[in-house]
Figure 1 (tube, rainbow, N blue to C red):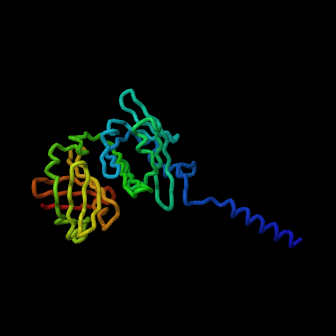
Figure 2: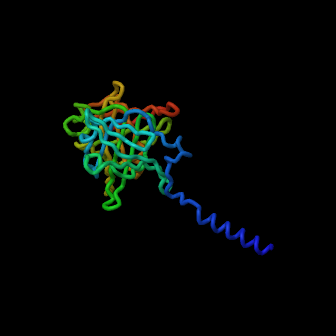
Figure 3: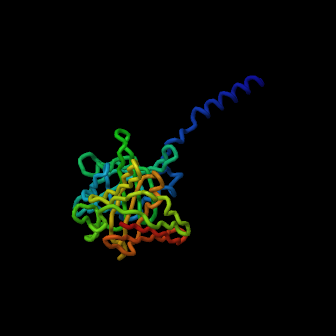
Length: 266
């Protein structure tokens, strides 16, 4: 009898182990995880930036109002045109991802990817996707305010041409920490089309930039991948002053209210 009970116990343990769920890919839209969903019924969003391998395609999407529904449906509406797709949040290898799927008959099919969530708060959603083929990086950013595309550059400031060219960081204060040395010897090249490159020696890293107006303030949004501490300056910087030889920026943290400063000089 004791041998029988022992054998039954072992069998149950083996069965339980075989039923253990692989947590490398977890659906965060399950009923047990509604708090983690975040985007559901959160109001209207706009596409503020879509960069496909460095090619800015924002103009194809920024006229649409985006809504995430709790049912897992996502809609993009512009006038009488409505495009419906699906969305879900998952955890894949420890990374939070937003999975979008749109019909292949619309431009929005370009956004059908499993996007890594770089930033998500009440006003901004920043996503990136690294292609499994050529390793190219796509960037998708959603915001509460609709941006106006000026001259195909992906910015909203008609004076944004003054930023085009090469700059060096002369001050970076991360709240109370001076981290200017992070960018010693780095040349930042703001290019038309919303591309920015950071060059140090033979190392070249591509990112994106745009200038827009938010609540009456001119802002410079910079996004870099997590390479050589460049992602430290990924922020929507308020432009304090800007001319042909100087750009002075600041950012007030939404968490503790700390203020960071970033200065570029020609």
